[in-house]
Length: 175
Image (cartoon, rainbow, N blue to C red; front, side, top):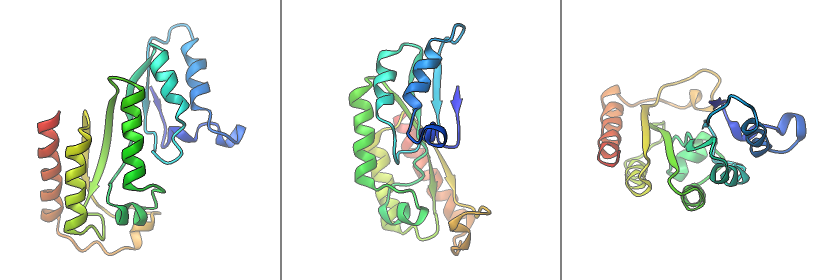
């Protein structure tokens, strides 16, 4: 299992370019490795040549954990995710088109500071549309050394939990 905070950054430090596909091809040749699964690939800057490797190399699982966190554009901007709803949706559709049968897993955060009713409705509708095979939902909480730490978290835990339960109920009908 390849796991990192963001696998898509592999190679940027040493080679000044994303090299996840090259890493996968090298690992495929290692005797004793029977399968390779990718965990935590952010959508921003996703190296699309990884899709070809997934499609062509039987040792590379057709599985991708892509922690999206939210989909409403104002929340994505506040989170500094570097992407937008349309771009992310198109990327996920590309995953499914290029890797038939791919399993997509994501994690979402509800009631991030500034999440409006409209933003939550956008998230709910998008979860229904994208039909993730696996999805986890978490309630927002302040974390040290994040931009959001300075934002006001003025929502009760009950409201947060209600929104999380709503998303998970939708997902239970999909999974």
